[in-house]
Length: 152
Ligand SMILES: [Fe+2]
Ligand SMILES: [Fe+2]
Image 1 (cartoon, rainbow, N blue to C red):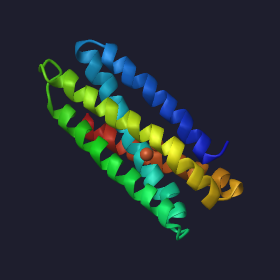
Image 2: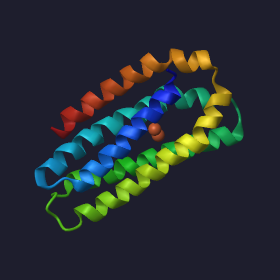
Image 3: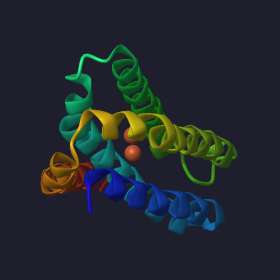
Image 4: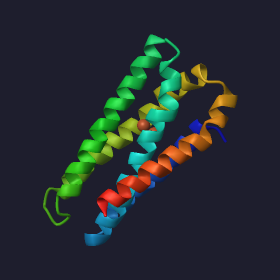
């Protein structure tokens, strides 16, 4: 498996979890939410540290623009995660805030798959895409653990 296929699998998992959170009640909602927060933080860091630099290095202006947009969308998503984490789950605005997070993340994953990935496939050889997978996984794991600790 190469790193892009792995990213797609994680996206599929995140989509399922977003729906699971929507349907969960009370404390359970917060528990799955925190899990997803930590997982997506790790996923974003791994993309930014391991995959995006290889595409940015190619000096293809359009590819560089897509990478910059992906990073801005990560920032937007993380902002909304933090806002939700500070909001009690019983608060009447929690579901509305979460609906916005879901929209931002879903849009981001769609764009990453449809716009970023074709550019990444052009910029990075299949061998490298396979070789960087362990690094992707270790950066993800480290950052996910750190965020889990922080969220308690
Ligand atoms: Fe991303
Ligand atoms: Fe992603």
